[in-house]
Image 1: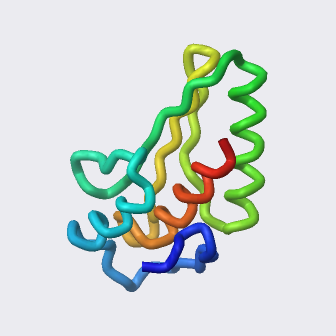
Image 2 (image 1 turned 90 degrees about the vertical axis):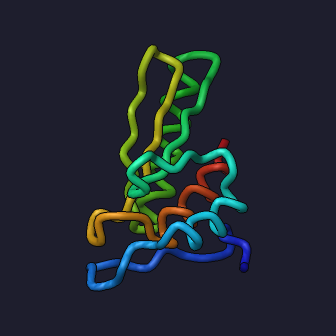
Length: 110
């Protein structure tokens, strides 16, 4: 499998099936810190920072990356220094390669 960080997210308008469990397992090899949610429709990861300022700076970097990729995660800052990110491809109701591409790129932002 090609390095996910070398790929670009492609627009998904639906009409394609979400990744199956075997495909998800293969992509997870490049994003091992991301957890697949119980329903198999999203992946998530929590990041811990020293303070709110660092957490917010990270969120802003992820936002810029998401805009550049055209694929947008759900992001939450909580307890002032934790950032939770969830990725899913809403147009297909599950996971696509885009979710893993963005996850791999977010891992490099840190």
